[in-house]
Structure formats: C-alpha cells, structure tokens
Image 1: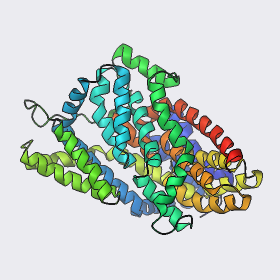
Image 2: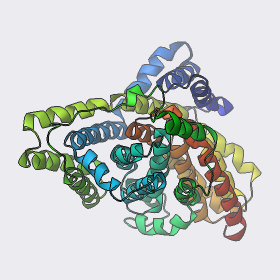
Image 3: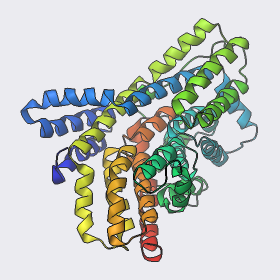
Image 4: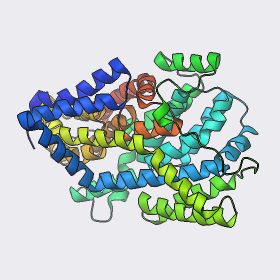
Length: 454
C-alpha cells in the first residue's frame, strides 16, 4: 500500500467531475480508474490496470456480488414474466388511492426487506413500479425512496448482512467477545445517526413536510406534465420483458411466495444472501413448474435472460470496486485520518470521524471496505482521546451508510437505479440534496453527542 497523500483524492474527484459534466454512468469510472493507475503504475500503468482487474475479480466479495446479483436478476425476471409483479401492483391499486400513498407503500415494503440492501434495492424497485407509474411518479423519485430505505434499514435493524459484517469486525478488533458481536451492535444502533435521519426523512419528503427541491423537482414536473417517467439515457437499465402467457392473468402469490421464501431462507441461513437466493430460485422454479406457469425449459431460459439483464449494473459495480481498491492502494483512508487526528479533541472526534470518512465514502462509494480499514484506526484514536468509542463506531457506520446512499456509483446506488430502471447518474444527482440534508443533521447530532456523551 502506498502513501500518495492528497493525490489519493484525485481519481474519485475526476470521476465525480466527469459524471456531473457528461451525465454518463460508465465512462467517468473508466477515466477515473485509468487516471489513478497512471499515477500508481506510471509508464507501466497498463500492467497495473491488468493486475488490479485480476485482483478485484479474484476477490471473494466481488465473486459473491456477481453471483448474488445475477441470481437476483434471474428471480426478478421469473417473477415479472409469471405475471406476479403485475398482479401484485394491481392488487395494491385497490387500496392505494393517491401518489403519496404509493410512495409510502414503497417505503413500507422496503422496510420489510431489511435482510440485505441488494435484495431490497432490486426487489422493491421492480415490485413497486406498477404502483408508482399509475400515479405518474418519476423513476428518480422511486429510486430515491428505494435507496433511502434500503441502506439505512440494513444498519438500524440488527438482522442484516451489514450487521453480520460489522459485528465480525467488532469481534476481530476486541470490542466484542467471540460470538457476541450482534449483541454489542445493539448498543451502537442509537448512535448511527445518518441511518436514522435518512430513513425518517423519506416519509417527510413524501408528505411534503420537507419540500422537494433541486433536480428532483424538475424530474417530478416532467413526469406529471409529459408522462415521461423514465429519464433519458436509461436504456441500459431497462428490463422490458413480456409475460409467459399474456392470456393468463398473473397471481400475486407468484411474487409473494418467492419473496417470503427468499427472506426466510436468508435469515435461516445465518443471513447468507447467496444461500438464500439459491434456495428461493430453486423453490420458484419448482413452484412455477407445479403451477404450470410455463414449461421448465422456458423457465430456465428466462432465468438466464434475467442474469444477462444485470450485466451493465455488474460492469458498473466492477469498476466501482476497482476504484475502491485504487483508493486502498493509494492509502486514501489513512491519509484522511492522519490529517484529522492532530487537530481534534474528544468532543469533536465523532464529528471529525463522520466528516472525514463520509468524504471518503462519498468519493469512492466504499462502505464495507472502509469499515474494515477505519474501525481498527478509530478504536485506538478514541481511546487515546478518552472519547466514547461506541459513538465513534456509530459515526464510522454512518459515514459508510452516507457513502453507499449518496455516491453516484456505489453498489447501493447502482442497484437502486437498476431496480427503478433509472440511470444511476440521474438517480444520484436528484437524491443528493436530500442526502446532504441528512448529512447536515447528522453532523449536528454528532456535535451534540460529542459534548453530551463522548
């Protein structure tokens, strides 16, 4: 790992600047990664890029992401083609009678999908499009509700893949006895300010208590006045598929049962999302075959098509992981913490941790990798300054949550965009003002905690 100092900020800043200028998704990541590896590899940058690609593709987490997201794509495709998604949307229309309630229902549905943010983002967006489209809700607004629910709910409900990962970090760094990480995590939940603020902001925005501002206001006006719900340049995220048999009316159980099996299996398999989706996919294929939804060959072919539909999102994820790895190689997290450490006291440490790590998370889209690097650095820093370590860990988790939610090319943003069929730049730029509102409120919360608790 190198120590490139302030230069380590350059690649993510290039990505952000080009994304804002061009409004494109993939190209800014390509250019930012290329610039970073020119810095790292110099004249040998071509080999440096190949080595980085190989490293990322061999990473267990990247392999896991590719398999899980592909299988989620297969399941979603099957649920759509069975007519289950359409039937569920039509069923909800009996009870949901206006635009605000359609979005509140989306928020409630996403709150139920708390076991994994990938599952949440893809399933909630796909399932709720029929309902929100009926009331001319822009896909940007749908993506905002989905994204603002998917990540926060995974850190404030202690039954999720996020909590499992963080609890293992707590055990590995001596903050929790072996096997007691989740029990210790329960005491940190009140201090995860960004998770709480962003999650609770959603209904306030839906109900108009917090006004809709910025480019989201423009997107909503476009949807209401022109009927164009999907923003331009979203073709790569499109998931237009025909039902297996247009003459046969779908059944809501074709959606409900696979989703229930998916959630239950994931929980019973120790929150292993991969095992959960394998079980759910196997169940769905058998269930649809028994119900004669379609011949088994057509079901399997449809599942493969669903996996293919995730290709563009997976390519974006690959380059976002490459950018994260580049930041680690350049020592980005260590540089930012080294700058912050000498200039803060115990009362300001929670705010400093959230601000500095939030900057890293936003510019790199890094959350879990950030936690793995930052937790071992923040614990001794909190002890040395006599600061409440649980508040500081809450600030670390909040920073990663902010990055996953607000970064234009984080995995959570990309998959929420995929679920809503809205390009990730447009999703990111329209929800950014609301993320910054939550960011500001969270900063105030950590100042208060720094003086009253830390």
